[in-house]
Length: 88
Image 1 (cartoon, rainbow, N blue to C red):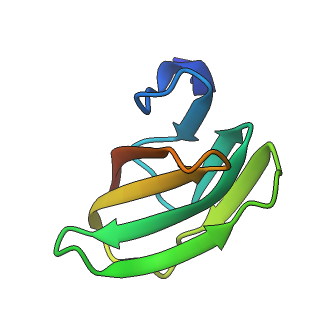
Image 2: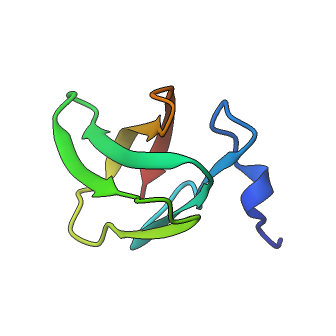
């Protein structure tokens, strides 16, 4: 089956985080985003990416251990979008 970024929901219709589950990299698409922070299942921050108005960001995740991750995307307005993704 083909995968579309539109299949992934973040709770914000203007932001896509894909693929999920992920392995070597994660893509972030959207507008008016400032940064994304990734936390492991224990709540420890494992990565932060400054987006700087890019509409498509690719994040390398090869060195991350397998497991559940929680992300927080901070929009330029200050609104926070949260979600979860699984690394295989």
